[in-house]
View (cartoon, rainbow, N blue to C red):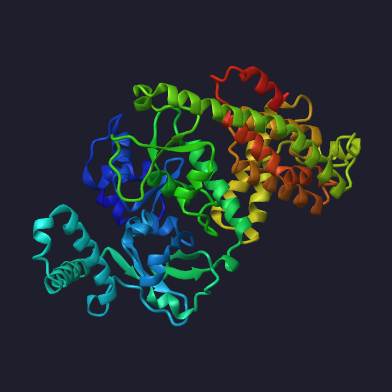
Length: 496
């Protein structure tokens, strides 16, 4: 896929197919788009953006970051394995790594002329291996011969850019607090500098709440992408999450393996059919067995496990309604809204007539909103998301609300039915989308209030305050096992 590799911008599958036909003379058939898409999937430096769009990773990941925990050995040697940077280091084309600590200094593969301490550690591991595996030969492995061999191999790997270790000593200009239980290195990709910028982060410097939110967003993305009857490699999904979600890779959150271990919706599987690199994991949805597992005789063990998972989901559904009722009262009190009457835009009958006269459809309002967002300097991606959410809501109003069906004529009751029922049940709303959708709706109605078209936007602010409840309902609906013996009962408790 030389055509894709040569592009330095976002592109669509349709565009690439056209270039292939024009430049290469490829004959287009019904299967050509699928053939090109399959070929793109094998290009390691290109990532899918969704909706048939692609981009080089160095463009899609601009400003994104990932986190690596340092263990005692890494702190002692001030070095980590290249594999700890997977899958980002390879898809970014093995870029330069620089340090933000003090003067910017390159963090390069280990220099064999000044790393005897590290080589001693490697040599010691080889020595122990010989003692166990080839005890008769161990006595012939002298210290001098061992270190010379290790240095020779390491020097060759450095010359070929394949060193298994990355020297982090430039980061330690900043003194590591002895009281820190954990130390992380955050690697952030800067496209203009064509480099990963590394910085140390201790526990006092981490925003744990934001990390938890990002972990939740990644978990939402992974669980949504996993098929019901198969497992996928986490590196593949992680790259998609970084390319397609505005909520992933910003803080950044925890390493992906930790997110999977803490998320009840996802589990790791041990399937021999997967060919994986170090650190890659095969993951699957927690409530379903994969095809390979269904042929495993250890059915009873799985059956016991799924019973525990179903009990966990049932318990959460039973407490969800109570949590939402409490949140509803709390947000209404904060906004000064009545708990018994539906809040709305506060328009009189004459003002409703004026709305319909000047804005007969919602299209003009959405177009105006799009221009207003552009004037605010928002990125194209955020603008598309905000406009897309309003188009979805307008479509819902047009086809589901008898009589009104207009963006300026909604109230609390309409948004309640949309967010807590239709968005989740009919639009397949994800938990991560359930957090941004109410935000975008709130911003739109605040803008309309500023324009004087509505008198009160608190009815929209209410659902922004309830976004975690909406997200949890979407998550629980996704977790609800259709084979659960209490499915109908739990479904009614969740929605009715």
